[in-house]
Image (cartoon, rainbow, N blue to C red; front, side, top):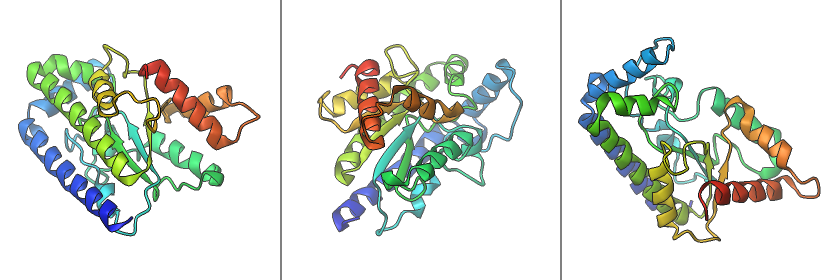
Length: 248
């Protein structure tokens, strides 16, 4: 990174860490109202219990990036899952979906991107749930304070991600679009991001299926034009999904 880009990234990282600390405090800490709502959501969904270490997850992988870091791409997932929130991790996309994403880039060296070295991973909200759809149950269980936290965190992440992308000059992929449309769990994120880019047609925002369950690769295989390179296909598919899902 250039000195200017390093300073921008460092400032973002510090703000993000502090913001997650503040949201965690507002949530009552690691065993407060948000954690209780998350446990209730798991029980209601019939899922197995698991150690809940933190309800709001800062991505510690950001702390591994130094001044010589080379960030080519920002990847935005949905929200931290079971593996991501564990104390030994506190990192995004380290579960099965992350392994699939890492494997995709490893299988395609022509893209020149190492998933763990050249990709900066963020989420639409740092609020944890075992499954993304459980965010709706958390909001119902905890009421207005949960709705406010989800709304505020999505808006913050969208604004900050757009500013960081511009400063770094990296690409921006939204991976997972099922809840981005109006009325979806991440509609606030979508609206805020659109505003940050002024809905510009030339904005470097691309939208894809999630890595989970290999949906990203399946979608790429089904939509790819054999006359185009992999990079060209990725760009065309990501743009088509953006227009379809975000409307710009």
